[in-house]
Image (cartoon, rainbow, N blue to C red; front, side, top):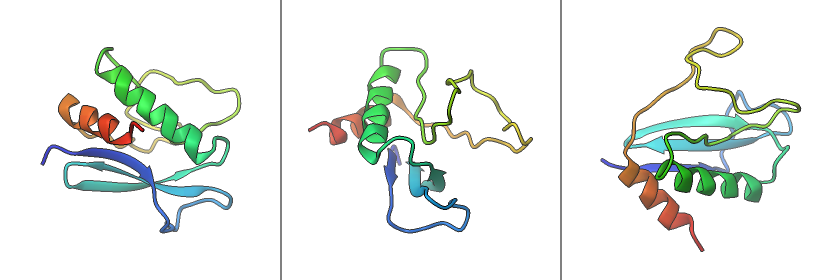
Length: 106
């Protein structure tokens, strides 16, 4: 199925740090939960996700930010985290991202 979504969910995950919230990214039938800090409000995150969805349809790359850390910028894509853990990567289509962007627009 050609589907993409990123959102916050009410359900907790055990790895969610105190003071953070739980999010979910959906690509086709794949679902993955993530922990997001509270530096940005949910509305700020959702605006950034919509901007990224719009940007990726006209640019070569964009980032769907789920966590913000002081004095850090978006870096080029990496396959491993600073801790040496693999970073999740999944393929989707521009059609799925465009559909997500259309659903999110007021």
